[in-house]
Length: 344
Image (cartoon, rainbow, N blue to C red; front, side):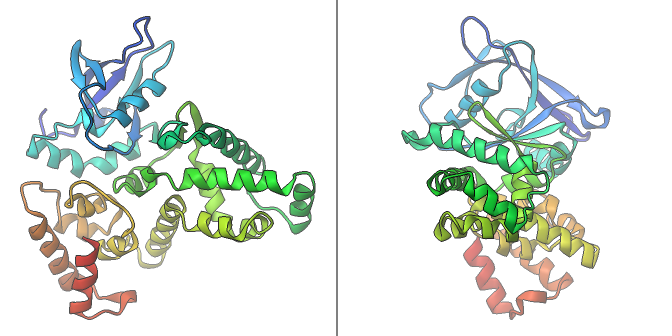
């Protein structure tokens, strides 16, 4: 791949065949030419034995279990589906290529025709009730989506409650809450992948949800907190502090900050607001925030996997001290360093 140009690899997921195996072809594309593809946002998951295999260009290729499950569910019975996913489309062992691909990650996700947030299969963590819970959550989201603004008067809420037994409502809320607590929402790259998307879908096994429904669910929080109160105060509290809802809160705060200051949040501000998230490579705790951070932070801390984690962290602190005030955090240098050190 010529890293001097905005090129990416694309996976062409072949339709389901009689053999049942997962088959893919790989091609190069130039982002300037606006290729059509969907981008996959997913949790890598743990390393696994070499029993999750696909065919890539006719050759056997091993992938992790979660990606294998996603590809299995995403393939069509009829036509080819064109996708971008980092595990296959980026040579993780090639540092220059990895740097190049991460630097244009924002463009990859913003240009995609859709971003699919894969949150796992229906039978999450092998729990017997998981598949039924996904059915309940889907029904509840459809009901919420029927009112496009998700804004109901107290009279409408009372009517809704009268037509539904409280135990049914409680089950639906807990089912939706379970989706909002899936571990994929704490994966470090998912925030920029989902927030940068023009059109987002959440996929759980064979179930598909429109991401805008989750967005509206968050934005209509005050009215719906009142609604949730009839089911269970604990459930309502957990819903609004879930990793999924925190993601939309981050997006809202960053947009408000941009409207007020004509720039996005600084790297330090974003890091402190996403301390609950996780990743395998500590350097990604910084690099994954670049595309949703202030422009000066992007320029000062370019993705470079040849540098150590300590070197990158020091660059973040030096840039913040030279270009940004402490602002809303009102911290001294020592306290700021301590907060960042704890995050990283």
